[in-house]
Image (cartoon, rainbow, N blue to C red):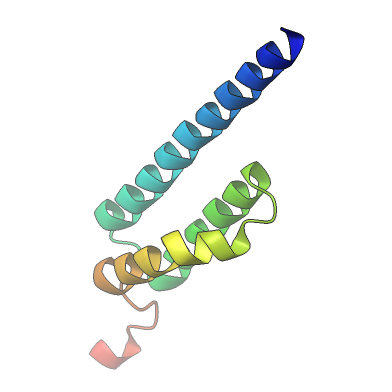
Amino acid sequence: MEDRCAELILVQEEHRRMRYLRMLVDFTAQLIIQSRMNRPEAERIVEVMRQQILRLFPGKNETYDIIYKRRFERIINEFTYDSDLSHLQ
């Protein structure tokens, strides 16, 4: 019975971390899309998000790369601008 309760608590904790992960990823994506920020700012935000995700799920670097890296590269390419705009003058 105790093992079953402990297992249930672990499952609930995993679900809580997954919900937080989804919220963090969605918020970061929307922030970049809506804020008109430059590329270095967006890259810093994504790196902070990545570090937070890896704190939640230690050792999951490869999983992060497979699931989220390309998504955020695409968002950054599509919705940010280069910080060096001297070529426009």
